[in-house]
Amino acid sequence: MVCCDTSLYPYSPTKVAPIVLLVVFTASTAHHIYLNIRYKSWRITATLPWGGLLFITGFIMREVSAFKPNNLPIFIASTCLLLLAPPVYAVTNYIVLGRVLYYVPYLSPIHPGRVISTFLGLDAVIAAITANGGARIASEDASPSELREGRAMLRASIILQLVSFFLFVALEGFFHRRCMRNGLVTPKPTPEANKQSKKLRSILYLMYISSAIISCRHVFRVVEVFQGPEGYLATHEWPLYVFDGAFMFANMLMLNIWHPMRYLPNDNKIYLSKDGVTERWGPGWVDKRPFLLTLVDPFDVAGLFTKRDKDKFWDHENEHQIVGQEMGGAGKEAGGRATAV
Image (cartoon, rainbow, N blue to C red; front, side, top):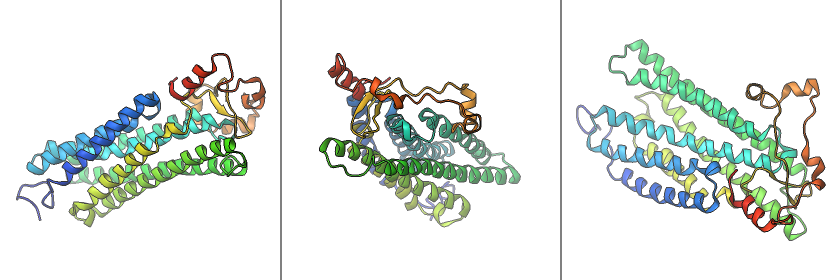
């Protein structure tokens, strides 16, 4: 049931749910800002409060739109903000996985720095397709063919987003399997070894759960787009608040409680020795290939054929200082855990 003859909604939009979600997202976002300050992790987890701010603004616009259901600019603003926010959490996972690969470089299937550039690059292409399709649909002068093209572009962008995220999960799973084979995530006999194993296991499980939540939301959007404007998901309001609201808040809340920087060093030059216990200061992983080549070939497939030598600094770990034991170790250790580079 529409709220009025000129309403842009096929139902009467609720005025309560946006306020509830606005309150909980504000609280979660404020806590994430505090955690970023506490861990000094803005370069790694700034996307968490950023995504929260998008949701806060989106639900403010949604509440205003509920009172003005025939206002097209407000309707478009609320819709776009709520569409843009969830992918920001996917970016958080990209950055965190990259930091995990820096931490265990000898098991990484890809240069850690290429995780964010590869998947964020794909997301940028997808966002461009989404914006182009949305602009065609939102135009008041759009012809029937432009509307069809716009909807087709939105369908393509959402499917590509889902494929990109599944590739990310596959990369994470491949790395996790390597960790299992090398015994880095299995219970250990000594307390110190078991502590490191638990930390690595915890961050991987956090990303799996977060990826599953975000994937469920992506699936919801795929089904909604393919059902069309007359489909069940588009003509009922509750799915929006479940998948874009409750699911995304659950992801935010989970990372409020188990913040990624509880388990990872902040400095990407700190890595875990192959013994699975000792943390050392290394030179960091430097990809000496041209930057454009790293974007085109992030896995360095060409290197497999040319047998290009790689700087495997972890094979010389005895030459690297143990975190906390070098001169001024206490301060540097704190820097490794709480100082961004």
